[in-house]
Image 1 (tube, rainbow, N blue to C red):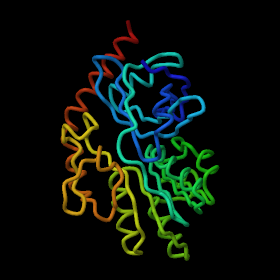
Image 2 (image 1 turned 120 degrees about the vertical axis):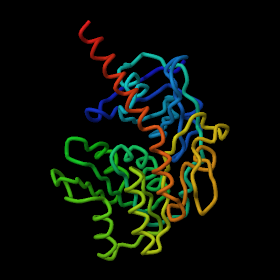
Image 3 (image 1 turned 135 degrees about the horizontal axis):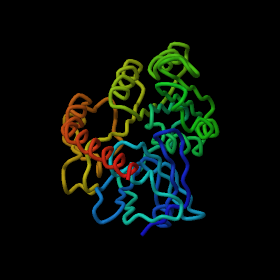
Length: 281
């Protein structure tokens, strides 16, 4: 069993937790992920490692309430325990040797981008961060990113906070203004990563993306997380989850991610109905 040491609501639908898991806290690195299961009846859900604290043996996770498992986890509190917390899984980010990097996060993907920005800064790189949200109300991790970046640019689709526009608009403005990077990391919604990669390809900048295909076991056995990279079949759980963004077939990824959308909506409806009935009881 793994104890929830702390819980913090970052906005209405995003929660940060620190879980007591000493071995993962000692070995986990930027880019890797864990898989949790609340109880013996729960589904296996992958989450990127948002932070590690070897000194107290805890691992930070940040998640959006999007389905039954994350909804149940969001309702748990400090001191509660979950059954499984497995990791670190996947390959760590390869961040050594870069001098000037731009880390881009979109929505809850900013949580996945944070450890990369933190690691690059610790390695001595100059780090610019661009984070994008729909509006001011859902902005997260602003102070965390400010602490590990040389320049932080917050963008909102509706202009309610920071720069009015998309992360790609801000990146294009910086590049056309003379900014030079030897690495861009883009993490967030698949269309966002695709458009960032289209832009960086024009400027011949190496770009890494963290992919989020459907995943079951996280060890390469099920084959559910297969993605096409450079015309070859890869498994995100063991070959990634980070890949060269200029080689990723994003259209195939988006199609595969929609495979179970009908069933996901049905289960979410059932869960919402159950919560409503529970509240009325």
